[in-house]
Length: 186
Length: 291
Image 1 (tube, rainbow over the protein chains, first blue to last red):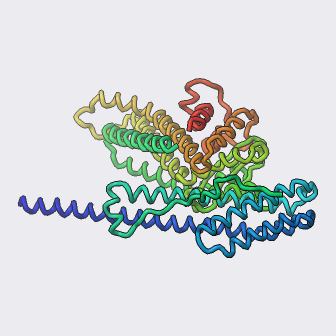
Image 2: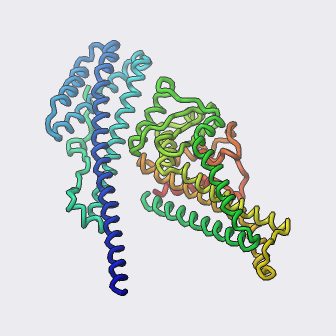
Image 3: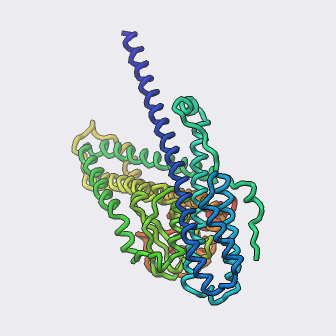
């Protein structure tokens, strides 16, 4: 009689343990997938910026055709993004684009007709929105990485995370290059 | 920021538990007094069913009541871009975006889950807020969507409705002398307690519901600031809204709870704070600036 009771209690504990393992494993999977999704989301926004640039260059050329140096910078930066291989190169290319775009918009300030042009204003708003979305996508990626890393590191999930192959992810960090102020050259 | 979020969630859980205690207590008293325990499940079923219907159509009803129209990217590019950006930050699908033609600055979010969510702002809000303030407001609304606040407050409303219903039945049974089955003559003390509780219970239920609503507003403020990483944006927006004396034409007592700032201008006093769906704006601003 007593042995039967002990057996039932042990079985109950085993079931609860199993449920906990399943629950924690699923949570880890959800977080890891969210991280991959967030990373792709960053790429989507970067791609959108890449696609908007030619339209912007054309719009500005219509009013400020002789600002050759600025246009060349923008085209160079865009080409750099297309040809970047490593993560570090990509980071540098993104910074180049950011810098070139800032210069382009600063130059456009001197042309009031251009500034009033509806097409230009729409592109300006689109690019500004895309820059925000890039920042938000990176923020969401980092937030999710923090959640996963915290779960992996804390007890009791830390006991099973390694067994199932869940590793800590790196945060998206701006390279040291980016910590210097972005140069705007005329 | 994080500390405020977790304390708010704890507060909401405690209040819900208080609610359940009130309802269970009422149900018990009801069966003691009337000797008709069968009525109780009927009343509960009625409350639940009527609430489920309104829950599924809540977003359409609410949008129609506010005379909201859809906002297109051509007409409102900055608004749409801001909402899309904050949806990315929250990891949610982009809600449907609506405009309410009213010069009073305000906004609301509705919808039973993030996939069926809608977010509306007034033209007044777009005119009077700058970029960071607008994003602060949108962040607050996205936080409501993320927390399933509509679903949560519907649940709370159901609980409150149940408590009120049961208390009402209890009172009626007194009036009509309904003690069909005598439990040895009926305990008069229990009857007196039941009478007092039946009168007070609806008030308690309403107070708890409003306290929960205020908690969720603070939570949405904190989580919205997490999304924008800039609490001052929302704080500035709330200051502007508080200073704006224009009344919101489309709002009334039924919809007041869902706007970001209480559109019904009430006049001071502590009872005001207890019976309000929103925390006092000064307190909201103070907490935001302290983050």
